Amino acid sequence: MDLIYDRQLLLLGAKRNAELELQEIQRYGRDSYRDPDYVSIYGLRPADWYARGVRLLGRTAVECTRDSLADAIGKSVASTAGGTRDANDAVVIDPFAGSGNTLYWLLRHLPGARGVALELDPTVYELTSRNLAALGAPIRILNVDYQSGLRDMSIPPDQMIVLFVAPPWGTALDREKGLDLGETTPPIGEIVDFVEHRFPLNRLLFAIQIYEKVDPDSIAELGPRFAWMERRVFALNAPGENHGVLLGTRGFVP
Figure 1 (spheres, rainbow, N blue to C red):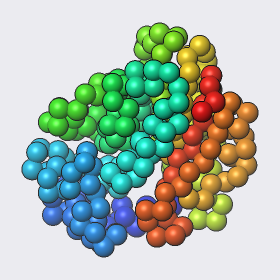
Figure 2 (cartoon, rainbow, N blue to C red; figure 1 turned 90 degrees about the horizontal axis):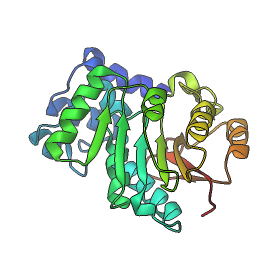
Figure 3 (tube, rainbow, N blue to C red; figure 1 turned 135 degrees about the horizontal axis):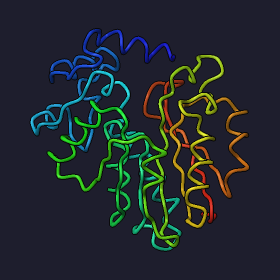
């Protein structure tokens, strides 16, 4: 596990699996990033989303994709999908939703698209369901594993599918070699293969969340699965601590 992530969870202590109070959210942002508003999600600062009834577990506060990063991912996806027909009529799926914030921003950048979130953890699912309802977000969320959820979806073959892929990293993130995409839980390649087998006729756009440093062999291993692939890193944190997105397509080239 990444040392920064470990330290952040230690700061939360017993609140890892409990709902955080506003002061705890702000203290986490201040202690970890010198910014009490660091955990800004759904387009709102912590004080604003908390006032509207949104709540996060400690681990979700650490793991969630905050607004600035989710916005950057959304813009990258929209620019990639924008050259294809009916991009705004796409189905946008987050198979490992967590807070659902990245999906929220993807839909902001793809107006008209339909959003579906899958979340296996029942506690996270319950909180995220309540959060999205409190905000009136047009996202359908299901308490199911990603394979069952995708298997049960009925999507016309002429409809584009956008997938934000961010499974738990677990021990896949190493200080020296970076993020190994073959060691996430489940491995990225396994997810891509399942999706491509499940939707063989659809145009697919994968947006895979990555770290600034990625094991090059794990990227090369994914290459043959895509018609086109591009890596983008966003300079939002200190050097060496930034996240990005690996974009890959099947069925079209941007």
